[in-house]
Image 1 (cartoon, helix red, strand yellow):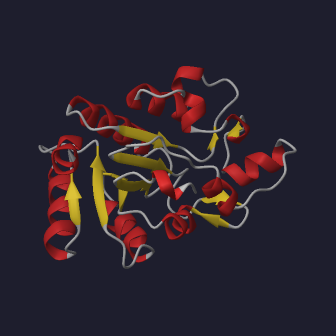
Image 2 (cartoon, rainbow, N blue to C red; image 1 turned 120 degrees about the vertical axis):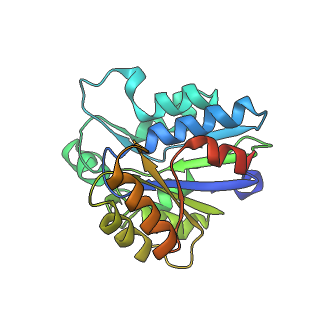
Length: 214
């Protein structure tokens, strides 16, 4: 990683699983911070997707639109894998050479003067990201200032969050409950349990983190 341009605040965004809303939260944070005058950038070290997915819907495209960058800056084009599977599996199916987490880290570069930089993993925290590791391995390599864990607010979230928190010991972690409905008692009670009983920093609206990080 090119550390001379490390953002003032470096955050790794991961999740309790696939399709929990990592990219939605990342994009919302990027837009909110930009609106507050914060210089932002996003990086997606590797992305996999279905060949039929529209270009604008790819994670790198969504993040780029929110950060004001080009998709190719968010994710190097040789790490765009048109196979909707975990990245190292997708690469193997496409006949591409295997890669390591260190390779992904070495390819991350930042513009000068970034206030908040987000690095988004793929799938859940323990989903394979490279041949030798997952997003937890990426966290260990990058040593970010914080980790944002996105989780679906529905029934079962306490179990999912506890598993991820156990794998992120000694890290500064915030849990974002996606699709949180304040009128749903399951959502409310789960949030309160994670907060009061487990002592986890829980947020339910990107605006809360925008205010904190601006």
